[in-house]
Image (cartoon, rainbow, N blue to C red; front, side, top):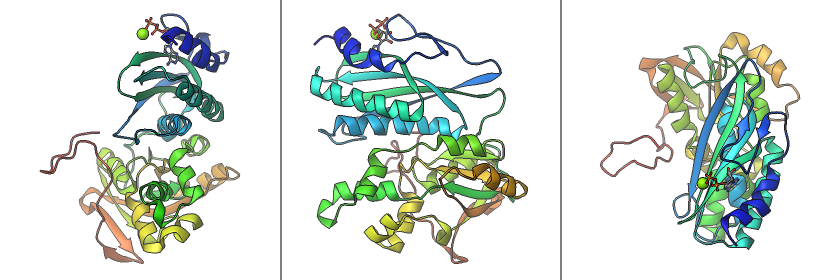
Length: 326
Ligand code: ADP
Ligand code: MG
């Protein structure tokens, strides 16, 4: 099956008509319309076989992970999702693989309210890239910079579940929990939360590399420190049952790919934020507070200082130290 029939059969149908799409899949470019008064926001994410997933991984699971992770960046900006493009590099035109990938990609796209408007299809080592586009009110949007001393540090949902799901795959002999696996394979970007908190939050990031690593980015961008209380980290019953409280708290701090939001909010905005979040169905938990820069990142356990466990994943950290940006 050639490139064009593959695109026509499996991907063209995912480009659902929409007022914002003047021209979709099939021409040299897509032609798109950002509503007046909105800024375009853009982010791109890649999954490489052997680096981000094991050879032989289920194509449908890859599709939901790929799109979920990318759309999570839109959630972290408080953005409205609009369109995405897909660059597919495939070792061969395996129609069964493409059919499984495309049908789940379509389901996830509909769930997240985002439409496929173009892409590129090439032959080579299995590599999946999506670029997502959305919009925020002009000049607004949630950024990593903006946290100030005294702000509360909050997270959505529960932490560490995806790391638990990874453990189920690495050591299935120790037990497998379906809910944790689901958190790993089908991240649910917190789009609704992001839009609700945007008017009140001072800074925000989505948790892809682990709470400590990603909160660290907020602290660096904002020029502040923070204190986090281990006992306040929100844990799911599934994770607690799977690995016990100590391991669960470590994974909540350092495990990647939860795709929850970590945000800061001035204490004076807390009551309004509570109102804005009413009925959104995702818990939001206060886990600490922002401090002046010289405080660094401090971890407490029931009020007593404790050591920071190793932080999140970074592609270019070498044995000799010296981390590059991922
Ligand atoms: P060009 O050679 O002009 O780059 P292509 O032949 O690569 O165009 O693509 C033809 C059309 O199909 C374009 O509209 C492109 O966006 C779309 N397309 C190609 N690959 C994909 C894909 N994997 N998913 C969605 N659309 C795709
Ligand atoms: Mg091309």
